[in-house]
Amino acid sequence: MTYETFPDEVKQDVCEAQNGFCLEDKCYKRIHSYHHKLPNTDYNRKKFPLFIHSPFNCAGLCFDGHTNRSNKFKVTENEAGMYERYLKKMKGKK
Image 1 (cartoon, rainbow, N blue to C red):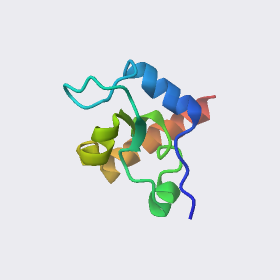
Image 2: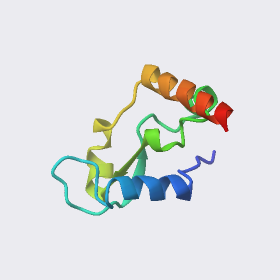
Image 3: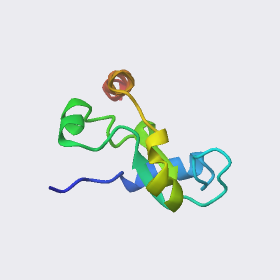
Image 4: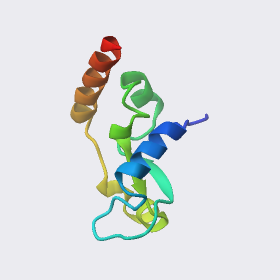
């Protein structure tokens, strides 16, 4: 099973939004990796295809934050559904 990561454009946008630093409060380390707030599973990719690799589901974290505290950055299925509906509306307007 291959699990896709975030597209480069999303990683760049998140990095810029976070000024290159970890999202965790009071952490001043640089972003090391990008974390899916809603896990990148087959089920979630099917249910939330637009949201799963969007900036709304992405947190730029330092190595320690991603390894030890990424569970702090979660999105519920209800929240993911709201984002998915929003992204569908936005995609329809293009």
